[in-house]
Amino acid sequence: MSRRPDGLLNHNILDADKGPQDACGVFGVWAPGEEVAKLAFYGLYALQHRGQESAGIATSDGQRILVYKDMGLVSQVFTESDLATLPGNLGIGHCRYSTTGSSTWVNAQPTLRPTKYGTLALAHNGNLTNTGELAELVQKLEPTTGRDRGATTDTEIMTALISLQNEKNVEASAIAVLPQLEGAFSLVFMDEHTLYAARDRHGVRPLVLGKLETGWVVASESAGLDIVGAAFIREIEPGELIAIDENGVRSKRWATAEPKGCLFEYVYLSRPDTTIAGQGIHATRVAIGVRLAKEAPVEADLVIPIPESGTPAAIGYAKGSGIPFGIGLVKNSYVGRTFIQPSQTIRQLGIRLKLNPLREIIEGKRIVVVDDSIVRGNTQRAIVRMLREAGAREIHVRISSPPVKWPCFYGIDFATRAELIASGLEIEEIRRSIGADSLGFVSLEGLIQSTQIEENKLCSACFTGVYPIRIPADMSEGKMRLEITEVQGI
Ligand code: SF4
Figure 1 (cartoon, protein in one colour):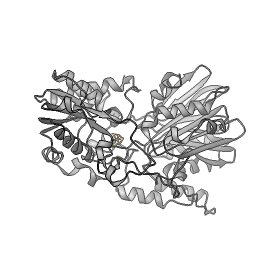
Figure 2: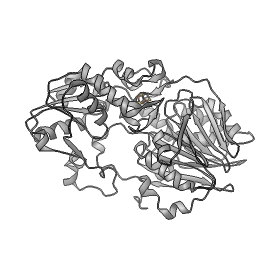
Figure 3: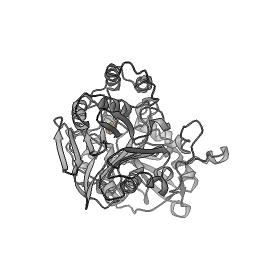
Figure 4: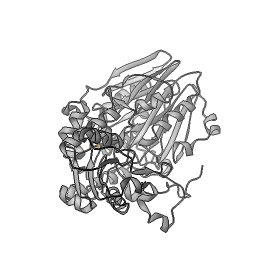
């Protein structure tokens, strides 16, 4: 597998237009007799949308843990022969988008640390908000090593903290450390014999348990269970730790649940074929679109989605408005991360690398174009321009989430506050900035009602600025990154 000589990931050729970036996907499997590395591979393959910078798998044969990880997509990182070098009865996997620490090989997961009772491998989805305090704890426990392990992530810090506990095994160490972690974390981790999974007390990021005929699976989303033929059993509860070994599944509650599930999972982050809290994500997004049509109606000839994330809401908008649904933009599904740097000529094509308009559908029509969110506004501006060039008579942009005004500290990398178009501009100013004839957003109330989850059980901080989990007072976005990159030598 090739990567740049400096170890950095090559740029996404569409970086200028990127929307919200997911934080990570995690997968765990306990299935003696099965090819666990292949199950982990396919699990990560289904979770690829949650992180495309690096991928890794750790497996144990009961004697030792082996890890294989590299930069790139799951399908780029692993070959059949790589997976054959990962034998075992249990394994964990991870695909990463970096929200803390840089996008380098050393920060790819799973992390690995020796402990006094074996080895610990760990994979994390989410973001901790008290990383500085935790790093101080690690330095107290390990003051003399002075090692620079090179990793710069909150995940490395929590791995170190668990491995340095003076307890009898990984399970007891995790129970000692989990209550000290603040922020968002859905974890899978393992020693040589046991698979563990844990979720923060707020359950910000999803994590589900599934059953194979001969074992168990844990995944960020139920789509990660489906791909390996595992039956959905239940969600890992907020504040719960489960352990899986030859004795079956054990559950321990290490904190009282105070649910604050991420509202953005419903809007964009999760796959449409995933189920959260018994609700299919596709159906929820269609319901949001129906609501959007009621809240932001317009006279038009055709509703089109920005594929693919805008598709269910566009279906809903068409249903709610009675305006026909159609496909006006075709996505080049195979463009995304590439290891070939585009030439200047290609780069200038921008959004056209990703989407191409169907002129014969668009020409002369009043178009409603539906997207899931506006972050910087670059994508919508480029699309409006593209639709005008393709002959659209009017372009009405409809967004199936409220304006994103605040950064996320719990694992999603939107942009800095200054980069968020809605943090500085009113709706009419955004409309002018993107060049649309009209612009409408679904209301927060409409979005929440569509999820069928009680408002007080959701995080909606990126829309409201009301953060349900403590953010240290001095933690600006820049400061947060600084604190973490300063935590070296653990
Ligand atoms: S701030 Fe937004 S993206 Fe982050 S956890 Fe809350 S709802 Fe989700």
